[in-house]
Amino acid sequence: MDELMNVLLLGAALYITWTLFQIRQLEHWLQSHKVSHIPDASGIWGNIFDHLSRHKKREISEKKRLKKVIMRVETMTAALNDAIVLLDEEYTITWLNKASRNLLDLKKNDVGHPIHNFIRNPLFLEYLEADNHDIPLVLPTSNHVEQRLEFRLNHFGENEGLLIVRDITRLYRLEQMRKDFVANVSHELRTPLTVIMGYIETLDDTQPLDACWQKPLQQIHQQATRMTTLINDLTALSKLETESTSQTSQTIPLKPLLQMICDATETISDQHSIELECGESFALIGHERELHSAFSNLIINAINYSRQQKVVRVNVSLNFTGGLDIKVIDKGIGIEQQHIRRLTERFYRVDSSRSLETGGTGLGLAITKHVLVRHNGRLHIRSRINQGSTFTAIFPKERVKMLNTD
Ligand code: ADP
Image (cartoon, rainbow, N blue to C red):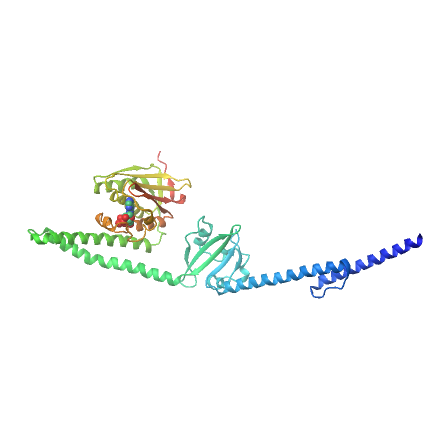
């Protein structure tokens, strides 16, 4: 019995020693990182080493594959001329590509720091913190006076940001040239046109004039007047494009402004009446001259494109965001859906013969849109053919002021 016990104990001791030896081999192998030097073993330990070795090989090849993908993405983003910066929700830089170093003067070790520590223009922080990033931000750089960069922030993942920065200096210069050209042409045309108008008026006053000259003279007068309106609108538009928006804004009580426009418009067309619904306390922070022209264009259009339907409504109300909606509602000819998107383009007309009839230049809504954008607002258009249109000028909360009218 004792003998059997001794044999069993010896067997158990040998088995434990063998197992400890295999465990030690396993530890050595795992530490060595050499997948190919798989320890020799038989039985269960042989199977364990095989499984682990296969697992390790798979892991290594997956790592290699991922490394290759990362290298490829890095080479691709390094080849881009646009700067790409990844930001976390606090606007801290988490990654940047090579172009960020040239365009934004960022370095690899700027990762981990907030981006607004490096781009110090206050407009940039304002743009980052805005709710809407649909319209990109254009900023000059401190390096070159003429250089312009366009910043566009896109969101992804959990509140992460992908900031793409493009050098748009060339485009900006071309745009500047176009604006200057329009402004100069409008200005240069004004003088000869004033002279022509002067002569027409003198001839008009010259009595008696041959009957055969009366009709041509009347047409010359009409066309010269049209050209004057066109030049006035072009000049207004190019001023809106070239003047900076940083002029001092005023608080403009809305009711008196709209009342003045409605009264003036009613005198042009005595067949129409305009109903104004506007609380006394509503005011906007902005530029009176610009807002006057934007609202006038909407109200005059409502009258011009409302054949028999003689009542136009102007309604002012707060919207659910705390912003202000100024609606100009007519029951006129309406606009087909496919035109609505393009109405604010320069010289876009739904029906040019009708527009010529009303004396329209095709620039009115372009001016209105520009004014609204300069006031951080936008234009919303809803229309049904033969049922009428509603043009809504929408201003954000920051532009609205409620006056104490007690
Ligand atoms: P225009 O000087 O020709 O009126 P606008 O820029 O003011 O130019 O308007 C562009 C076009 O939009 C107009 O030609 C007209 O076809 C259309 N439009 C503008 N307002 C209205 C409206 N209230 N009802 C119907 N069509 C309109």
